[in-house]
Image (tube, rainbow, N blue to C red; front, side):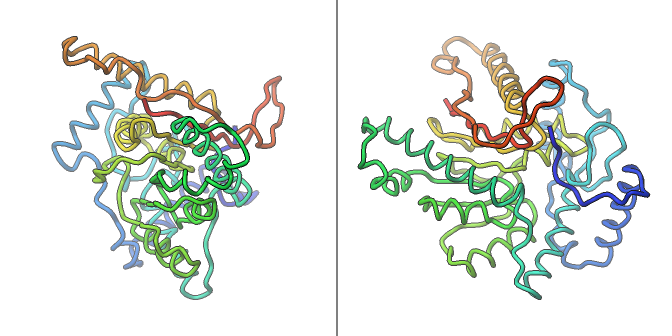
Length: 337
């Protein structure tokens, strides 16, 4: 299972030395970059009573499931320690600085910026997602699979409002627009990412895509979406020093954003398909336990799990290691019940 792609390592430095060097570089960038400072979003969970309670609830859920929780909750502005799978990529300060640089490159050279996981993966994800949505729409309208389906694809897709979590430069939404989706929204907790995405969508002919600053772990969105895309956002959340707690918060939040009957499509390079399925099952069990604490009258009609496995991409290149077959990327779709 490959991790998120990092910059090439220098042979004479250890990973610990590189982490310290990256931390020092980011700190100095934050000190001297007015742009990066102005893009610092107030997402330090624990700054308000409500956020304290949300973190406490998540920590309690993890504790009851025998997961390790950091003893002291730290904000996403603090440096990670050297334990586990933590990385600078789990910190908002990293992304603020990164998008400050990408904005400068766009203004000076017109550069688009990095395509997360690469163009090939993005094209596979969007094409596969389109086919999945069309298939679901067919079943909803009792249309058989025939030659008229392709002609009606745009009609089917027009009913799918789309949210891209952690949209970055917004290129995934560009590709979805090319596939026929039209109601498109991208959110990111970095103002620099949102500004870059807005510039690119205007330049590249997608002015109708909406972008806004929002943090999935403390979302202010009140709208639900029939299709929610996550390409690397859950990966980054898991690399935060409080990654296990924040992942619980992620599932609580995203379950409210996916409309009943809608789908969540997660693309990850840090988790296998089976690991994502296990995480969803743990979330479903936790929600079921919470439902069991209320009266049977109040729980009427809520005994089904929030998410159900729907499908996954089977066309990624695979490799064999230790007798097991795997892929460096996993894309899994979950149906919201």
